[in-house]
Image (cartoon, rainbow, N blue to C red; front, side):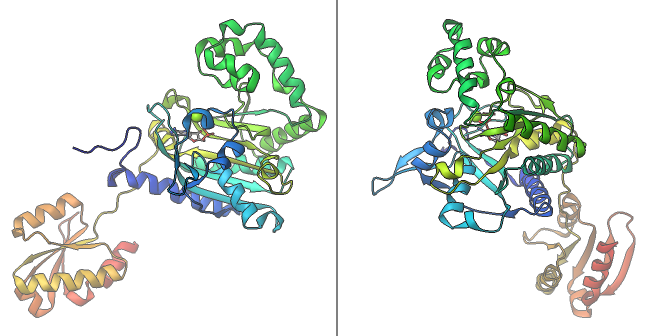
Length: 420
Ligand code: ATP
Ligand code: MG
């Protein structure tokens, strides 16, 4: 028996409806905010991620699916979307286009992680990026999009946590303070954090080990080390969130797992879904476009995990999107009736009506049972006599009322009934 690889999932038709609902909501909300969809390859040159996401991050160090192709090139299945969007902006000359350039994507991503609830090796993201604006107006409208998508999905009980991690001018001072603090307790840190102390001390604040997170509680806070420009940016962003009535908590422990962030970082957390409770993470990354060989171009973005959104929707009791049921089912008896059912269902389907008929050669009784199980709104029993006379009886399954009509006018009748 061949099984799916560990950490991947089959999304069965019963669950695809939740995915579609989220994708449709994300697409329509993003487009109301002026975002347009972008698509890009599922694999990229490995260097894009080691440079873009950052060599010392967990994603690059331990989580990438990297392979060599037949020409000996090192390629990697995308662990996230931002680096690819930036590469595509640069490669397609969009960095000098009309700004702001607002883009969104719906993608699958791959990370070699320990599978658990809300964490898999292939997972799905809705992401959005705004290029061209250094103003906190962009951060505020980006967060507003994330908030709108989450609330349109009926997810309640979320908390927005925000922080600022400064810029290249104030980060070094903060970094020194962090190294000094953690060095004094380095023997208590976990093994990976001891290594991070020199490579990427800010990552220690993100460590999930109980001891490290306890030590992190007393660590210096980025917000106390911000330069004047970063401070103003952060305070102005907070005032723009207040103006939109978006509730937030300033949370110094939010530093995000990827290297490219500057200034604003944020997460939407839904505590009721368990340990993997971050449903959306994002922030500003003013240095990434130039880091990847483009011009200086400020930008910010976020990504949401779709399976975590589904868990959050369930926890919030959000209504499942309605599963489509047939408008009409044609039960047939006789060879002429069967041929007739195929042609009439085709006509109805071409008018956008979900019509169904027997393809199993079942008895009339079994066909009626099937129609009932699938939730068909109307049924028509077609015998050879009906096929010949061109008239049939349409039965409303809810109240058993019957209407006799021309087979050719069934489409009009149902279209009218469906539109009410
Ligand atoms: P985490 O701290 O949970 O590992 P992260 O900081 O690595 O998250 P990002 O790279 O910011 O995550 O990705 C954005 C969002 O994508 C996350 O908030 C989460 O909802 C989702 N996500 C990330 N990794 C996974 C995964 N392995 N499985 C499912 N969803 C994921
Ligand atoms: Mg992670």
